[in-house]
Length: 282
Image 1 (cartoon, helix red, strand yellow):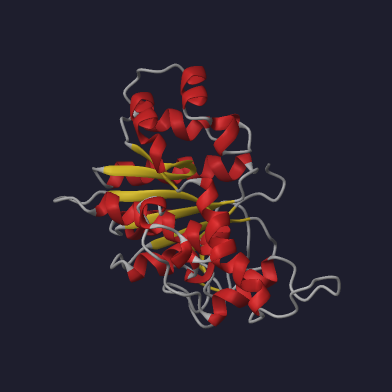
Image 2 (cartoon, one colour):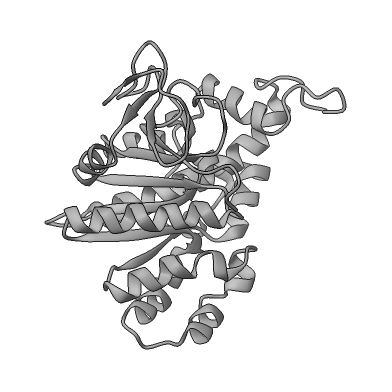
């Protein structure tokens, strides 16, 4: 590290204060090499994103390429695909499908609502370097079913291979409450502990748990690979969501890396490290 209270400028990594690598005086600058070295020794590296930002997907690609240079045996897991489509992802990586065939057979227009062009560089990277691709998501209906009825109401055969999520902490409920509008005067739910907020929290945790269960399953091999997860940042920030669910499954030491586009230093403890993008990039 080169010291604390570093200015936020494009092209640098910052370790937030009070995080695993941050200091008490503010965000500390950390080298690209050090970030990747630490990440390469982790069981899983979760690369957060805002789904519609091309610059963030370019950043994910660059980080994944760096990790491949340091760690043989990596796999990539994608929130964008349900696990049932793994056979299609395998055929794509094996070179058996054209891009058009891949997107059609992977049901891209149905399972994900963002332009394929944002993600195709990542998919091409996996194909070029024979990196296994896996879907981290569950069937879409399960999210709404659990949100509406609760986990126990779902029959075992309809749980898509998932185990129940560990309960959301008060801190996670507060985080979800804030990112969904906080105490807006026209909102029916006025605080994060309101039982009326339970439905949203349960639904969010189905995604969190699905990503964690799939990653844990990918690690369950004699020589566990490094799993790189491409996941929306709302499931990763502050160690809530998927990192917490992974820890409950015995996967500790996960590294959360996020892009950062703000002029202000990142919030304390939001991630292990953040890469500062040019605010003008899209």
